Length: 263
Image 1 (cartoon, rainbow, N blue to C red):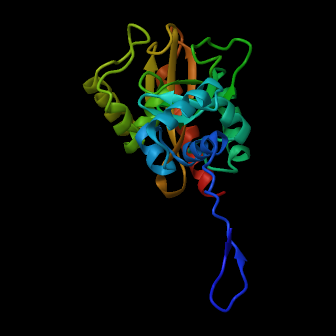
Image 2: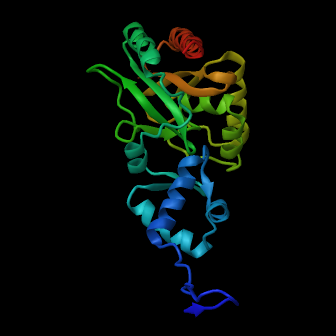
Image 3: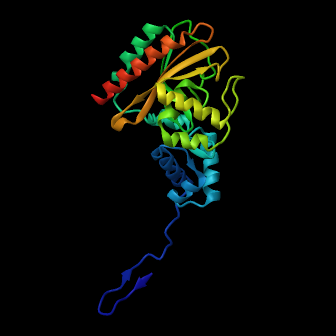
C-alpha cells in the first residue's frame, strides 16, 4: 500500500504478515538443540529452547525418530544414529585424539588377545567408538549396535562412577532392566558397585549384559580431569583372568589419559 508523510513523496510499505517457519525449519531447530546438548533433552526443554508448541515438537520428533535422526532415551531425546554418522558426532570424546589413542588400544589387544572397546556416553548408553578384536572374538549383545546400557557393562560403570551428572540421570530411574540373571537392578546395589569402581579405578561386569561374557574397564580422563571415555576388555567368562586384565586395562587407560593431556 502507499503511505504519505507530510512534505514527502509517497512510499511503499509491505503489510504482508511475516511467514511462520515451516516444518523443515522447525525440524532443523530441534536437531540443532539435540546436537548442542551433552545429555538427553526432554520434550519440555526442547520446547523452551526452540519456542515450539509441545504438540508440534512431539509430532516432529516422531518423524525424526522414525528416520533415525533422533532417538528416545528414557524421558529425553538424543541425536539418532543416522545423524551421528552424518555429522561425525562422538559425544565426550576429545577431538583429535584418535591417533594418540589407537597405539594403546593395539598394545592392549596384543597383551590380552581379547576384544578391546573404547566407549563414550551417548544419552544413557555407552557407545563403542573403537573396537579391536581377532577371529576368536567373544560374542556380545552389543556387536550389531555398538552400544550398550550403562548399568550392566564395565565400560558403562566406569563412565557412571566418574561422571556425577550422568550418574544422577541414570539413578533417577530407581531400577534398571534385567539383561541376565546376574544384572544389578537395584539402586542400592549399583551405588555400591560404583563406589568400588571409584575406590579401585577399575570396573567389572561378569555376565551382567551377556551370558558367558566378562568385562573389565577403566576411566580415561581428559582436560580438566573430567572423564571423557572408558577403555574396556571383553573376554569369555569361563577363562577371563579378571585381576590380570584389570591391571592391564587400568594401566592403558592411565597412559591414554596422560597422552591426551599432552596433545
